[in-house]
Amino acid sequence: MQRTAQTALVTGASAGLGTHFARLFAQDGHNLVLVARRQDKLDQLATELRQMYGIHTTVIAADLTDPKAPPHLYEELMRAGIEVEFLVNNAGFGTSGAFAELDLARELDLIELNVKALTHLTGLVLPAMIARRSGRILNVGSLAGFLPGPFMATYYASKAYVINFTEALAYELRGTGVTATVLCPGATATEFAHVAGVENSALFTSSADPASVARYGYRSMLKGKTIAIPGARNKLSAESLRVSPRLVARVLAGHLNKS
Image (cartoon, rainbow, N blue to C red; front, side, top):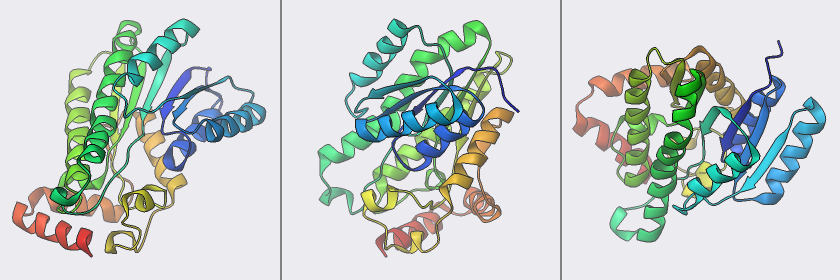
């Protein structure tokens, strides 16, 4: 069923889950603001969705590891008179290896993107959502956020932040007409594993279909769910991690990440 055209802002829209989120919004007749670093990929996707669904698309090439990028992005939206009804904070990446041996600048970029840009964009669009009593925020977390992750320490910690931030925000937003949802998938067949250098690890011996994961997150967001964990096995894992001793959790994660 077609819905009234509203605008969704999707970060990390040039690949993986971001592309699938964009398609889901377009199929429902919503306009799009597509954000990522790769201008060519964004232009290609924007043209395709515009031609297929007759929606309006806006492409903004931006590197969200730059702390100046979120306010510049928001200023562009204001100049264009674009009101964001849906915010999908999907952009993010991971790294692997012992923390002391990793490139510190890269780890700080990870925090800038996975944590600070997500928080910054949410803070910029949220007041207007609350004022009009309408809006939905979808933050992409991970099962990794439910436990400490040796050999991917910064990434796991960043996703713990995303989960806790979104849960707290969802509680604060009760009764405002605005909702916040965190999507917590397990291993998913996107570019993430290659970028993080873990494509051959035990974690990625079996990966979920990204279209199915995005669809689950999208529907959960529309329902106003706070935590969305796709897949029965992932749900069971998340519940098990809640009650497992922290030592057991970190030993397990360390073994899987190192292998």
